[in-house]
Length: 255
View (cartoon, rainbow, N blue to C red):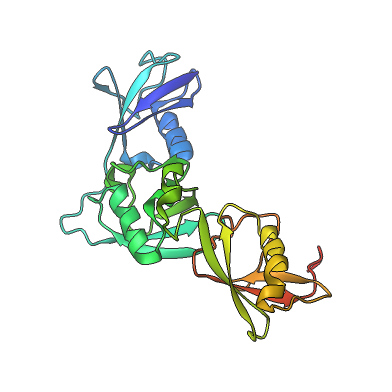
């Protein structure tokens, strides 16, 4: 049966068994939403549900019941800033950022922007399977020291596409260089385009810019990683002003 849970900032539902204990319910909340069991308190009609002697039958938890989920973090009389590890999902790039438990998710996104240059509107943060909402404090999600979050890159809002911003806008400029760095050319691409479109653009401008393309074939390298022609620049986490290298040859399934 599906039961609804409500925190201070959001609602979600989880399927539980007809005879699950309160502790088993908390374990499922941890598994699907990322909230540690020790931080959870469950209430039904104002009454706290006990881990020791309660199950769904005892507390008359039914299909569609609404349970209040109260979350708490470990007390710290003199809290130090938490160091959080953030992984960008598509590129697997990791970095750390410091934050306070009292910070909102929006403030954490600003810190990430200050550190990494990724605009807050371009990514969503996840703790476990739960997306973190901007106006909620990190303490409510029990995001503390050594927590691991995932940043999922998203496209910019359509109304911002005409702003002319080079990061997150419709177009961005990348530098394309040959393997030996003897020739460099600036090319405008759409962040949502597949990398294969860069080949077409280089073919179009090669004559006017005197840019030599290897006759035997070539592939693109970005930050020491081979680029997939069928994936977008956004998927590769390419940003305005970044450099893409051309290497002679071709990529086969065994390399």
